[in-house]
Length: 341
Ligand code: SAH
Image (cartoon, rainbow, N blue to C red):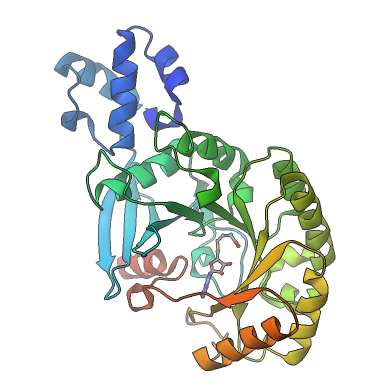
């Protein structure tokens, strides 16, 4: 089965060349609106023919959890019964959708629930587009865009699914579709250095975020296995290159973990490694996933950020949303899989 949302409008027009040209646009609009065949105005015969070869809606809402603060966490069921997560964050300055790029993840970061069962498979560009379409339709008029920002910070490592993610970036920014501004998209990576260089060449105006979470390779290796492949120095060098090519500020994500990465020496090292780099540090309070890593208090996190600011490092503490509904990466999926077992 082919997935119709994998095609852009031109490709769809070629793929559906047996039908009048306007049908391709009708199908394309139905995809953007998160519709299944029966919800479209396509002739019944065409619906029947397409159904035999193509999925128009490759996923559906399986479960939704609503937080007190308006955050909604979705568990989406793919056509092959795999589950992925997506979070809709209600915000005054424009709603944000946080989405997954893979079913599971193989990066093995110790603090992250997405990786507990490894990587099952990549999402296609169309599955990622349909994630947005389905969640958008559930949060207002399906003919309108009910969000402003998208962050690729759900399950999966975007640069481990590089080609699909690049294709998705083209689809989601397409004028015929959601027409999301590149500036409103953030891609978070654990630091696949080769891909940072490759991605630099494409000149997308998105915000590149790096999950740093440690200031020494020694500590980083204990919580992020990817550090065995790339050192912090190599990441920082790649980021300098990225900023030079794209002239976009990069963001370091720094999840504060008690007694692991919250020392004064970390402040000094963060100062050193951010020196001369157009960047910002986003400090996050760890959402403990049941492992051995412990969170700091919010007050300690505030003090950590203040110290960074006082030594001239641009840093803020990320507002925590949806922590009452398994808001952190992969937690809802992990819990649901456990319940099923
Ligand atoms: N693989 C990509 C994207 C997914 S994780 C990457 O590594 O960047 C994106 C972010 O989710 C991480 O940087 C971290 O900030 C956050 N995250 C994951 N698990 C978390 C947890 N238990 N508590 C708080 N934040 C978490």
